[in-house]
Length: 204
Image (tube, rainbow, N blue to C red):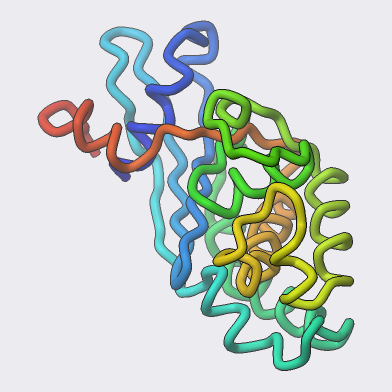
């Protein structure tokens, strides 16, 4: 939840949307955090509506489903089905529809870096970038046709992330399919900023 505070802080200038619910998506290696909340219009303190951690992340999905290199259509379909089933209850039980989606961490920032072919990673060129669902799918389809060795040579993709990036993007795509939103915003501010900014201010 501190990741939510940190991510929201990166968009503090958008005060007009302070009361609108925002969904934070934090895809890690072993898990994915979903946090739905708002920024208070009175004091700027984030209020959490709902938060949950799921045992689906870039590494876990890759290790569990992608046995061949590159993964087969069947492997990707099984991974997608598993992710959808895992996330289903969160979205069915949630009556609040988010007005926007913010994605943090390496999977989201890598999507921007690959899409824009950033030869040298630059946080300023990544933070605040909008990624549409079509762009997300395009990056996934492009990378899923490559072997790990080929992905390591892909401009914008850190070599160490090449083996697991497909698992992370698969999670992001599934999340977006549950929502009416057709785009997400990538944030470079997350957990560390949340700890520094929200140590004594976050209320749940």
